[in-house]
Amino acid sequence: MSRIAFDSPYTIKNVWFKNRILRSSVGGRASNYVGTVTDVWKNFEKRFADGNVGGIISTTFHVNKDRVSPLQYPSIAEDKYVPYLRKYIAGIKRDRPDCRYLIQIGDPGYSTYTSLFAEHQDAKSSAAGFDLAFGYSNRRVHMSVADIEHAIADYADAGERVRASGADGLEITATKGYLIHQFLNPAINRRTDEWGGDPDRRFLFLKKTVDAVRARVGADYLVGIRLSAADFNYSPLQLSLFRFPWAARWREQWFGNNEAQMLEYAHRLREKIDYLHVVSGYGFPNPRDTPGAFPTNEIKIFFNSTRHLSRKAAARATLLNTLPNGFTHWLMNRGWKYRPGINVEFSRRFKKDVGLPVIVNGGFQEKTLIEEALNSDSCDMVSMARALIANPNLIEQFSQGKGAPDRPCTYCNKCVGRTPTSPLGCYDLSRFPSQRAMLDQIMEWNRPDPA
Image (cartoon, rainbow, N blue to C red; front, side, top):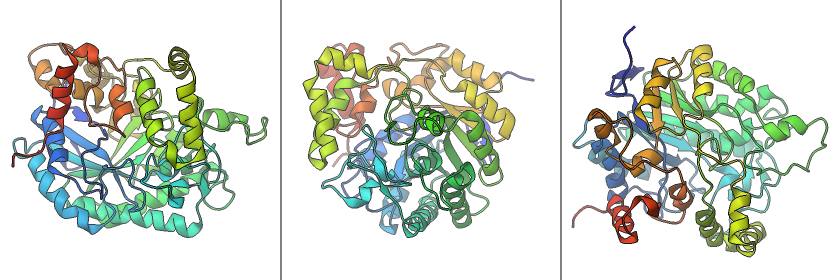
């Protein structure tokens, strides 16, 4: 069997990729406040296409018109968004028509980060409860059955719009602590009706969503799922662990879904989808999805920007601003560290057991590590975002024979912490000769078309 190189082509369903490296989903404030994409958004994405990645997976386009968060993130919740997408996806591919573009769709549910004003719908989730870290609402709000059915219809409508936009495929996010993940996670979903109470019923929302999307986009269209291989609820410690009895519910409250449960869910999806995008962890950011440092100062900026929205948000911001900076950074970094290829072991088992094409994400930027994952039957493709933000010409450097970029990403996660509040770019001053040079690059990432 011939060795698979990073630049070996690969086909999933009927979509051909020129190499095995994808730019993974990464957010940024590059759209209008109403959620339409712009030339700034197009030019940000075009940098990766011009850098010769095999494909791009978009930031999460929100499917619910009332939950577009953070502000200036794109939406696909109404037909009015499609013409802008069609125009600018063509612009992304103008000079690299062989770069595939996939749109990721999702609904943040109670994980809604920001809003102009506090809104009741921003607290909706699989079940009522409390979560200090994610979302701004004081408490999660139990969704009615009508709410659930409406949410599934939102995904189906969005899927049809994705296909109409000219994208090469779509990806449904069942991770990041978004609404689907809130139904899957046993610590969040405490329902006792047909939508929760045991693993089969917790899976129902994802199953019906995938079925609805597939029915609208057709059997021939590329559909994938970004799936968390295990929840690791305790890392970071974001859940209210005192709400339920310590004995019977302790394990699933503390750990969430384990790998065995998620493998079972993946088997149930096998005939419905075309690939799995494997990550791990619950919520965003978390140490498994974005391995590296916890961006304490950047998260403080974000918490301060939302403190007006609720008592919880105000208390959270006050706590971070009151504690000494050194202690806060030490405390918030418990459990956070960089581990290269952190999800490879999971992706290997999912690929072997489920049999679908597998994309893996988490801590990649060295050519050797990428090709080891490809050749150990751990995955079919590798996705990354932070490493490509740091080095948009990473593919070119690999093609020149380099095993790693000249100025590698440090995985400081400052770009991750800045996404809800700032232009997207690299905020690690150690990678630049001056702050001015860093600012110039950030602005170059976020430039509009010439007048």
